[in-house]
Image (cartoon, rainbow, N blue to C red; front, top):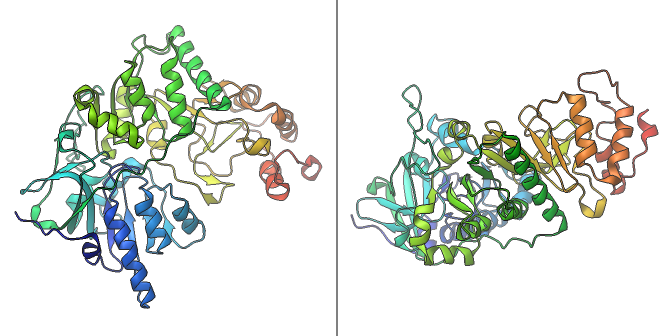
Length: 498
């Protein structure tokens, strides 16, 4: 079939006000870049002419600045799901301009197939190659591409020559049947392949093809600092102890690691520990640390939904595909984060907390309980079904003005029932087998910064210590109130709560 090649500005005019648009990729990897930027320009033109123009946007997770950022600055979005990490989009969400649904990543594809969100008008897919019969070779991220392509009325393909056609073979595209016809997802080890190397679509649905040479927009990771170093060492110390006690098999178990600077650093430090054997990963994002550990022989295989690596690392992978091809699989997020597979493989999950409380509840998403940071992402998919679920965070932030450990989290994303271990730069709180009152003592003693430890004990004195989960509801948010009033959580006047 002969496709209609056109410029991004021409293709942008195929998008109509009110359209529901879905994009390929997962994080900034594999997300379209040229066309969303052109849509933002088109929206600006329409707004200046006094005409309305806004779209609803679905993705695999976050996207790059050329998508979420440009569309937000152009005021071209009215709805967004399931995840984001854009400063400008965050501002639009928290001002009420954009309606945002923070969703578990593994569930969105199924909900779309069930009709929960209505129809998708246009899917925009980044590709390394496109055949005449509709075979799309995706790039560095998969996300929900298969479901979006199948459900969309129309498809626009953005061919990005920054991604070589020789990456053919690293993808494993599989979409499960829907109940009541669904069978088990036949993944019994991280290396199992169950799908196809390319995404097959109806070529008649492809209304435009746009060429681009834009690189991925994955930012550089910050250097490991003293706090992150200590967190990483404590994670390795905990897992090493579990190996010695026999709670983890000698062959070890697959690792899942969250996204971001802390997660990337912790993973690298885990790989440096000589007491931790070589391991595999079944995760959503494959970051720089994973590639570094592969080159050292510490990670033997990694399954994920995206190569969320810096441009330098991506060039390294593409330049040495023969060495990496048999060590990598990129899958749809519905498979990489699938609870069934997570439970079957027995993952050790390593995620980061924005805020944790003394009973083990985790806030991953909301600053002071109200303002969205990024979103829950895939952390819930993994945490609830993990063999051991670990959360980590610094013991203080903002020069000591904030304690990420508080009496009661201001928003709950992961309850105490799912969180098994909490680790900070101060130490390790193994919460397994502990009742709530025991959990509180363990967390305060092992994870809280010295500046806040006595404040935590003071809080408990205001509670009825005989209760199953001791709380003083008048004082539960005293830390948050002190910060909002004075800019420092340590400035607590307990007399107000007695």
